[in-house]
Image (cartoon, rainbow, N blue to C red; front, side, top):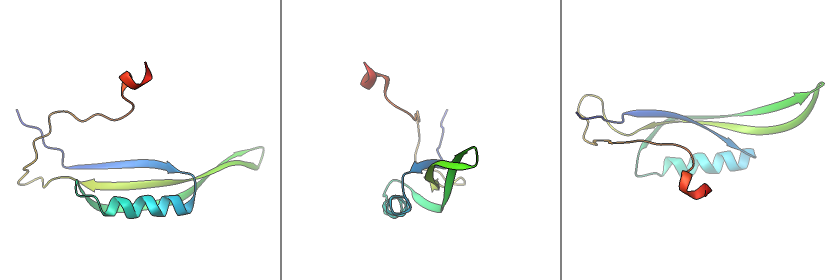
Length: 87
C-alpha cells in the first residue's frame, strides 16, 4: 500500500508581525514543498474588555506532490515534540 502526502494546511503562532512576515518569506524558499497559499492575522486575548495578549496567526498551505501523478511515497508523518527529548 502506498500513501502520498499531497497537501497540508498548518497554523503557527508568531509573536510579532515582523516575525510572521519573516517566517512566510522563509517558507516560500523551501525545497521540500511549494507554498500554495499563506495568510497572517492578528489575534488578541481579552479579559474584562482589556487586551492581555496579542499574537499573529500564520496559516500556510503546503503542496508536497501532485494528486494525479504522485512521486513521493510517504511512510509516516508526525507532528509535535519527540518524546525522547522530554526525558
